[in-house]
Image (cartoon, rainbow over all chains, first blue to last red; front, side, top):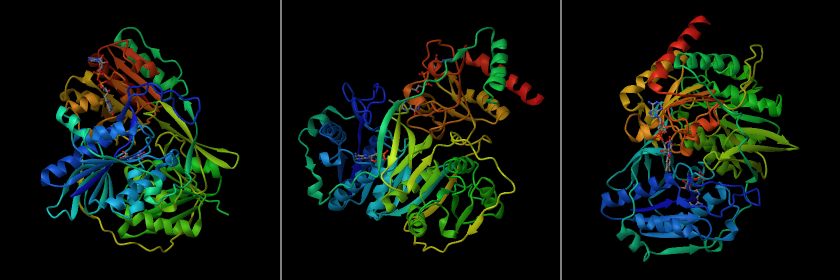
Length: 259
Length: 327
Ligand SMILES: Cc1cc2nc3c(=O)[nH]c(=O)nc-3n(C[C@H](O)[C@H](O)[C@H](O)COP(=O)(O)OP(=O)(O)OC[C@H]3O[C@@H](n4cnc5c(N)ncnc54)[C@H](O)[C@@H]3O)c2cc1C
Ligand SMILES: Nc1ncnc2c1ncn2[C@@H]1O[C@H](COP(=O)(O)O)[C@@H](O)[C@H]1O
């Protein structure tokens, strides 16, 4: 069974992000880059599927500039078999739809049985590419999955998708697109052997032209980034607990009108 | 010319629109005046529900009623609504952020070749163009988004936009267009309901109580639930508490959990790590109780008490009870 995992490289959440000289983007100097955490769940699930079936191939795909190779290398170190890097300045301003279209073009070439994404990338936090990819491919799709099981013939997949108040369990015919929610699994750490082995695995560079694509103009664009508006200074309520609690409830009712 | 602002209806799956629709319709009305229309894909739309949408400001309600619309499946909903969009060319399409709307609206945008601003927290006209504001980088920055063309498609974060007042006299024109319903390839096997806590749903609650590692163990959450019952709050948790197995994952607040934006957030024994803040930073009023005065959560809290939560929580619950019994 062939599985494609779409991964995005994002700034580590612990690193500080600053607005760049061009206010449309962040200053990338000094940023630590990681594989978006939800995409690690997607990678892990793909690897487990392959291991359980005793055969198959897991291909990591990422769209982005040169630095993205590092993220793909991490995916290979975890155990993916090979990687595809959509690396072309033509995609520099790609919005979620242009990204989905580019990913779809590679996926059409590869013809996997399953595509796994993260529920959202933790930089743009759009949570859109997986669903849009399914739409462009015309494949069934389930978002925010918490569990997954492919049947013995690799004809369908049973998934539990997280919804308000419960879990909806669906059978989807393959090929299909799934997006991973936290709770699906616990991603593995790459072993030393994995890291060494990754150096020998293939990362194929692909340009828009190789896919017969001229990336469309983005449909949404960032006009500018802004710092968060400052919150009004907070107040630590001092005194005996009994009094502090009384004062807190009074303030919540009378000043903040929050209760 | 396209003028209508469409609001896709999220409902309770029992025939009534959810309260969050007052926020979506209210915001659309603020931007578009009378040009606000509701679009409801459902297996059953109640007359009261349609009336309610009118009272919240929809001048027209498009009712797409068919058994095939429940449960939500993207491959059924998207072509059906796209057909109506092609006929009516709305200027904007808004929906609240819920589990299914998040996927649905993204797929719809892809099918229409249109732009999407997901999880928007503000919308404003600049000249003739709509500009959306949305948190990015775990809520550390805000991005202002513009669209290349209409329809402007956006999802709106719950509890952020001012809800429309319900105007009893107003009523909406009802349209029941016929659209082609594609056959579904995916199939529902079962729906597993969560054991109800009797408290509101985390992402919808106006008040959220959150317990972190300072709660010390799963058995102690009952004191937060007691408070929740008194003030009608949902009870959530930090990742540290979820990873320790004290609370199921669906209660996790933060970057890898749920994003919430309640009117009031009360954090007990939560340090306020950046990934936790990512999920609750747009809360209107933030209260923190932590015994460490240096805990980062105090930096964004409106009110703080530096003390042992096990002393504060019962006293606070009593005080809330006293207040609410009085009023
Ligand atoms: C990729 C990634 C994603 C993450 N996603 C999330 C996420 O979605 N949500 C999330 O919450 N975290 C997330 N985290 C984890 C986050 O970094 C923190 O580790 C976590 O939020 C800490 O939880 P906490 O505040 O409960 O625990 P701690 O940081 O241990 O804080 C406990 C606090 O309780 C206080 N305390 C202890 N006892 C008492 C008492 N008796 N009375 C009063 N106060 C007391 C302590 O002073 C302390 O400040 C993520 C981390 C990573 C790397
Ligand atoms: N540039 C990209 N390259 C590969 N996969 C991506 C890219 N952007 C987004 N994805 C995938 O789509 C998911 C959702 O991303 P987003 O819609 O940007 O929040 C991510 O978790 C990835 O699985």
